[in-house]
Image (cartoon, rainbow, N blue to C red; front, top):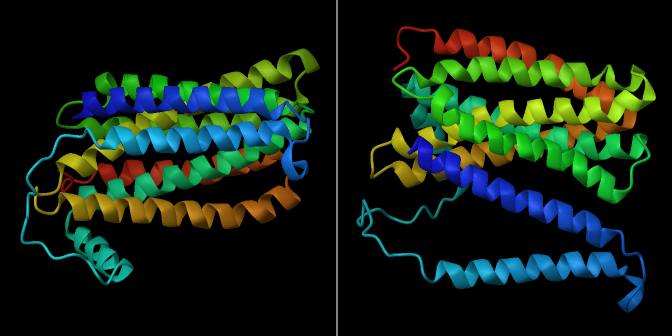
Length: 280
């Protein structure tokens, strides 16, 4: 399962890389078209719709599989049912730790993307140049996903998680020093640190996401995955809300360093939580 997820993460990350690069190139076209909308934005919008339609058409070819629990009722209560599932997961210590770590990493990822976009503006980069900063991190995510096959395997696979989170925290902390480097070294340092942060993020996300697919009983797997996604998106929404004051009061590099400072105790907490004897 981990090998399949690492391959899937690499492929999806490659697709995101291609999209970000092409979007950066497209947005450089500022000639206004209909209603004064720049040509670049129209190209990006058309590309998004085309990819979405292609996804719908490809989904028609997905093989059908029998349901693990055909008698399961549809969760008409929506979020209430998801909250019940989240509450029931507390009896599984390892699953709970993985759930919290996954939500935290996704929240950090959202804040990183917003701060990196602001960093591009502060470095006076074009939209294309800013997209290359994101590409550096996503490239690292793909590499980290592949490394997860080797480093996060075996019965104690989760031992790699705190190490990866400490590396993620360190890479973000060092971003705070980037603006103080000599001018020729600033961008290379930022790219390198974003790549390292991406590798750590990939090494975290791939095993975390894979665990939701192998830990639950087959009849509960869909509920658990849905609940984990709910928790991750809730964390991302909270992160987006936090980003507004961060961007308003902190320089982007300082914001990344502050994010790294917050990640350090989270990594220490993850290390402590995974060292318990009851973790299996």
